[in-house]
Image 1 (cartoon, one colour):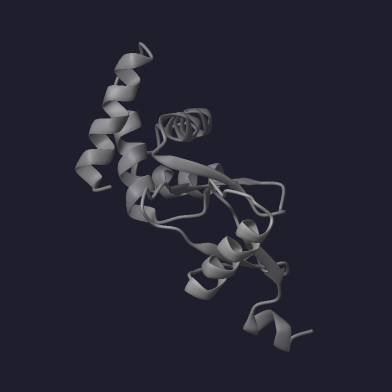
Image 2 (cartoon, rainbow, N blue to C red; image 1 turned 90 degrees about the vertical axis):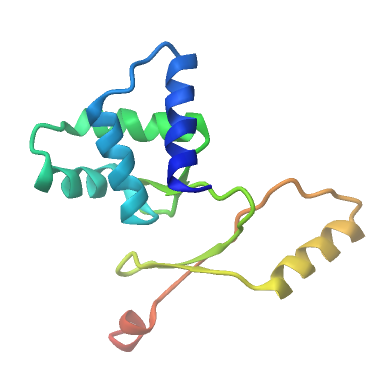
Length: 146
């Protein structure tokens, strides 16, 4: 979904919820889309505060939750006790490698894993609607210091 489609979808969602499309919400959406994925509320807040010191933490937090409700973002939990958000991709799927030492998150795609999942599901008469694969371990930087 392109930036303009995402903005339009969010504005439409706000209207259906009886909420206003404010300048702060637009700034938060712009920065969220520009920043990439796996942002915590604090990550996004700190990025925004540099340019817009009047934006509050609670506003960023509530707006991220609105993004998830709207379907333009997905909330993820990677075992560090902190919710992170990434932009939703309707036709794209990826899995995650998560370093349990430094918190680095690497996205990857592998058609062999996808095929194996379908094969295993078929063997069990199961129809997959969605899935999430998260592999926890140590990144190359952290594994050399162990």
